[in-house]
Image 1 (cartoon, one colour):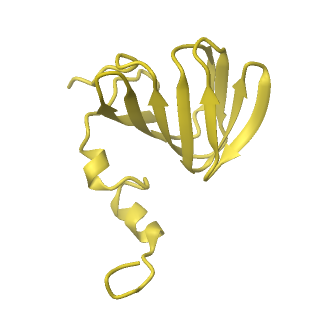
Image 2 (image 1 turned 180 degrees about the vertical axis):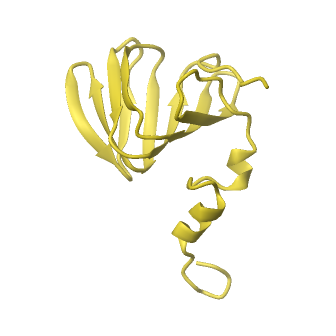
Length: 129
């Protein structure tokens, strides 16, 4: 709600925010360097973690891989995650945890906005022009 008590229309904000739920303060963060067309993310960095605000087109499947521990929160959209051989569809409001070294893959069924926290400060590099 705004200061007048009116309910804010988030869909109108998304039109202004390049069709993402992320305001300018997030979209002005450094972008990550990711070589997959249709996936972009904005990086919030600490000494021992990374937080990435992802905007992912329905690009199909992210192949099986593993890395540091990862915790994620779905903001918009639907994706199928296979974590350690167990598959489930995640949507707005769902969260997940992938322990370090566990093989996982994802299929993006719609445009997905997700916030991921990685337990490695070097998981992603900043995109250079």
